[in-house]
Image 1 (cartoon, rainbow, N blue to C red):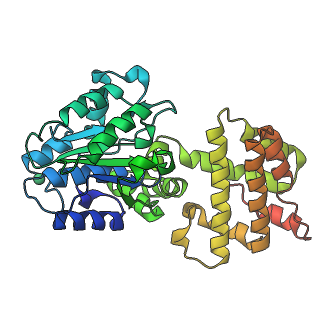
Image 2: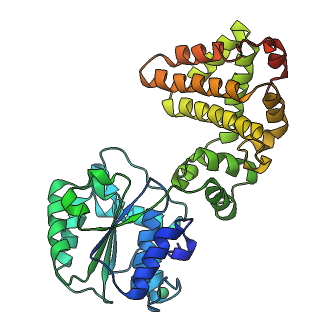
Image 3: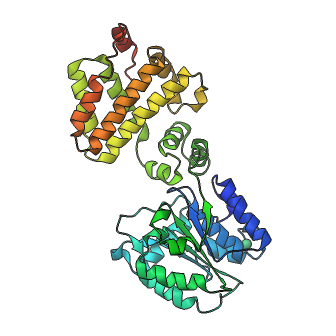
Length: 374
Ligand SMILES: [Zn+2]
């Protein structure tokens, strides 16, 4: 896997800062990379590590020297990569397996349950190792992913090494939840902020590097809400099919026919898992966002559902901006209702039953202009 700044998606500001520091040679003892899940913090941390051990000594790794190749395989003795694991995977073989996956799969995504914590054994060995000089170069780099998942004793052990003057070790901590880190750790790190990625950046990555074709790439990028990791996780799902189901339900709701409304609500609520229900709602929100964009005359190429643009135009011609807002509010009600444990079916039914009922006399006409989406 390539570990170069040049291959990171977006994050120009964070990377410019890091490259500047490398050029000036003023590397701190510890960095804290803060930002949402799945926007490239770990990758950037590994790229920084590679740049520091790279034989060329420039402000980005060359990607081809022996040191860079070893970092890419996650086998460089001076670059350590720590990440949370479940306690039942807390053995060297499982760790090696994950490292192998990260090194070999450029689209690897870390997912773990709530209980995952940084493996203590590895940290203990590591702290012992820190007493010695780096093996090869001037520096040792420890990349610590999701540092907010460490335990109290690990923090205090780490703190000691952070306070050593003239340390040859650079710590790079990443976190999506900086407020969970002890203030004593936070205050000793130089913060670098990572932002959510833009839709077009995610779409570009999916198409150019992950082999996803145009229409699903567009949908995935919109659903990803700024997280490339989320887009990659969703990649395995039939998003186009889910989208079509979600929109077809709205078409049924819009007819105002009670039995169809009921059936649509039943279908929306039939997903046994909440994640899928949420996704249905997300697609519906995205449809409304597309309608608003059309109303405001924004270019078709910015539409999430641009593969359905003819249908969208038809729907848009039958609703005004106020009506789109009203429907958005209906969906928000569903989200709140489900979160507060109203049965999903009742929540969807309540919104779908009012979906097409917009008072103006053209309700019937509108119902007939709403496409079936199927
Ligand atoms: Zn190199």
